[in-house]
Amino acid sequence: MNRIDLEGRKAIITGGARGIGYATAERMIASGAFVELWDIDAAAIDEAVKSLGDQATGNVVELTDEKVVAVAAGKTFDARPVDILVNNAGITGGNAKTWELAPDIWRRTIEVNLVAPYLTCHALVPLMAKAGYGRIVNVASIAGKEGNPNASHYSASKAGLIALTKSLGKELAGSGILVNCVTPAAARTSIFDQMTQEHIDYMLSKIPLNRFVEPSEVAAMIAWLASNDCSFTTGAVFDISGGRAVY
Ligand SMILES: NC(=O)c1ccc[n+]([C@@H]2O[C@H](COP(=O)([O-])OP(=O)(O)OC[C@H]3O[C@@H](n4cnc5c(N)ncnc54)[C@H](O)[C@@H]3O)[C@@H](O)[C@H]2O)c1
Image (tube, rainbow, N blue to C red):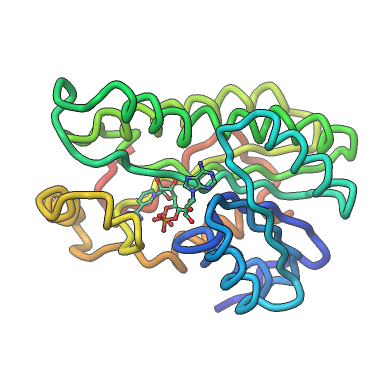
């Protein structure tokens, strides 16, 4: 593993208690950063912080709650200015045809995957802008580019997150804050428990490299996007789909 320079940087990683968020925390700590995990699962945060060590802290945050996010943002920034925000938390909302998905599940998926990243940006961008520096990395999905069948809520939420990235990137151009997103193919994390085996098989069948991406591979791309080395790219979408996407 090469060491990306994140020395002394402070990162908030949402959904960082497990999976891709946890792998990103590991990678960022190995690169010299301090990380704060924002997640709804208190027990998983405790376990993650214990295994990540001194450079990690945790905060139980329900990311769809505007007030909770605002308070957490203020507290986290007061403790140490935040340089990096990784909007990673997400849910699939299960798999079914669009007309079979219950409205509350459709709405919840949009809330967690799209509204929550807006809320974290709403709370943290003004603080980052004052400091004149920031890197925001949104974890979207290949589903947002291609539209997976039996996942219209998930695909639409991730397409929305891609568009949020593009708009915010342009709005913040010149502020010192760069905003980009990644669009991974499937990674074998606990999010697989929220999908049917048929859907998992479908996703694998679409990947020319013929395997799932490892969380550490996604983390490597996120860490670079969160670094100073990423200096002339904003509002952009980074593919990590094993050859599935051709754009
Ligand atoms: N694993 C994949 O196949 C895959 C592929 C493409 C994109 N992604 C995206 O990557 C991101 C991470 O996925 P993962 O596979 O690591 O998932 P995961 O289920 O392993 O982890 C997601 C984390 O988000 C947290 N979370 C969920 N809702 C929350 C809320 N309302 N408030 C706070 N925390 C909340 C969960 O507690 C969990 O710790 C997600 O946005 C997902 O959509 C995953």
